[in-house]
Amino acid sequence: MNSFWPTLWFLLVGALFSGYAILDGFDLGVGALHLFVKTDKERRLLLNSIGPIWDGNEVWLVTGGGALFAAFPEAYATVFSGFYLAFMLLLVALIFRAVAIEFRSKQPMRWWRDFWDASFSVSSIASSLLIGIALGNMAWGIPLSADHEYAGDFLGLLRPYPLLLGLTTLSLFMMHGSIYLVLKTEGALQKKLKGWVKHAMILFILCYVIATFATLLFVPHMLATIQKVPVLFAVPVLSVLAIANIPRNVSQGHGFGAFLSSCAALLTLMALFGIGMYPALVYSNPSPENSLTVLNACSSEKTLRIMTVIAAIGMPLVLSYTASIYWIFRGKVKLDAHSY
View 1 (cartoon, rainbow, N blue to C red):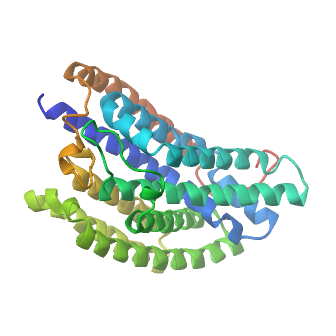
View 2 (view 1 turned 90 degrees about the vertical axis):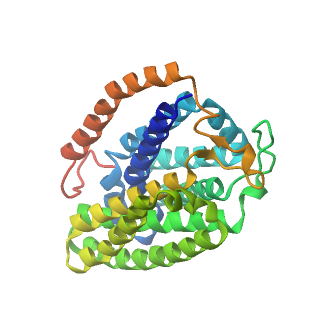
View 3 (view 1 turned 90 degrees about the horizontal axis):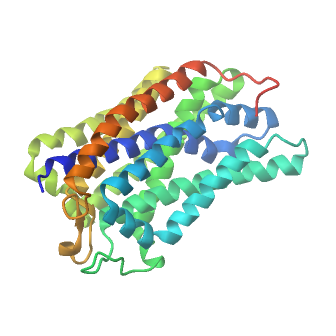
């Protein structure tokens, strides 16, 4: 098969998951930070900063999963069967996060609100860690048989490198979320949150540096594509510049600039992951010849062509919906009778 259509859908699926990481990343970051504020009013402000948009952000995850299923069904089947328990845990965490947001303010009792506050925070942290661990396992590689069946177990997914990427993802989302909260709040809470941004930045940069060195030393196949196509070295350079621009904007009080830089950092890091993986969708370790690639795991060319037409119609709708929601709910968070 011509590699154009599978490669195009590799890029489209990557774009959908990147959109999810950027948009739901700050939602998860807000949740991870939720228990650091103590008063009921402050916790309500944090919830309402993401309340109108969190479910729309998850559309990107659902769309990305659907696109992966349709474009690369064999990779979808292998990943979801091999990571079955991990994905069930992620699904439970996402469900508890959604329920916590909706139920938290339904009753005035302190124990009720504390329970859902803890559920919201723990589920957000768990979701972030599981997403990062999944990415770490994809980069490291998982044992696949010649039939492309997962040949490991759940504990085999908890190696040091995936756990490191899980912590890095959590710290990145916490930084992303704290920057977003600064944009959405004001007064004493905003002042407190500005301190959180600095701590989250330090934690993320520390994890980022360690994860980078670990990748260079222990996952060298992630560098193969950049070595073959040197012009792609621009992507890690842009990633470093985007990350470096975050503290610069924060120190100058440019909250929106810091948020855009954080979005750019997420986008370039996802691009680096995609470049490192290509052409593999599921890298097999220790038997690379058993890997699932864009060519041996894709649907037929006719299917991919039809899907491209559907995507050309659907993607503008998703983008328009996302843009309109953010425009409608722009500005600082205010509590009223309809707030969470």
